[in-house]
Image 1 (cartoon, rainbow, N blue to C red):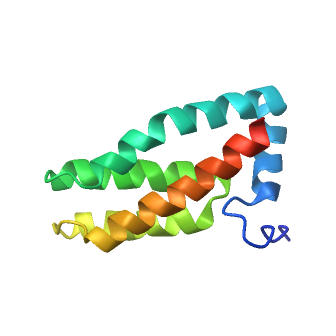
Image 2: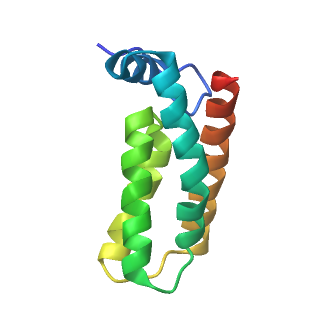
Length: 115
């Protein structure tokens, strides 16, 4: 059974370790983290777009990336954003804010882990 995330941490370190092992080591994981940190802020920004199809694509991409890195709360929030956009509705400001806040927590932990 997978190890529980460290209390208060937005990213499950066991998932990161498994990903590192699958990729062949820490250098490859660092490249993945760097790409995630470089690309995800744009996706967060797109959640406020009036183009619902763009919102859905951004939310889906965020969900996938967050799942791969073990950021389960961010993945859940992005999945909710994707469901709302799939239904053709704009996202509530509160949901966009929650996604943005959680992404900042994830980004801070990933940046600290790669340092």
